[in-house]
Image 1 (cartoon, helix red, strand yellow):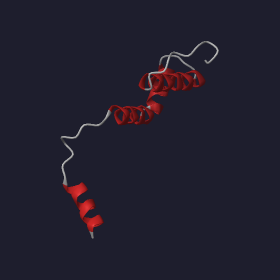
Image 2 (tube, one colour; image 1 turned 90 degrees about the vertical axis):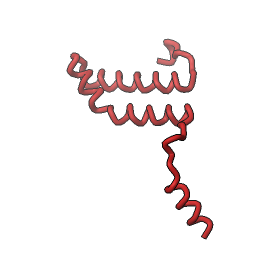
Image 3 (tube, one colour; image 1 turned 90 degrees about the horizontal axis):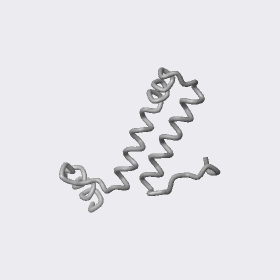
Image 4 (tube, one colour; image 1 turned 60 degrees about the horizontal axis):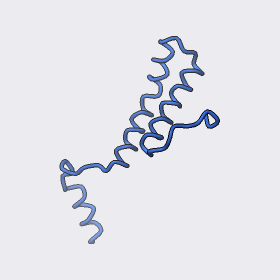
Length: 80
């Protein structure tokens, strides 16, 4: 019975005041970016890129976001 009460409390409580920590905010930002993948590629193609180039640009942008969120250094030429 206490489990049901806990579940009810979770759904009844307002989460409007709660803040999302940085790690979760970064995950949400990446998820949102992933949702726009198709439009990102379409936009790149509209700018004159080939499909393969547009997909590579998307992957590079996503990798850059991850690198920034994890505070990783820029890749060296060997890593690219």
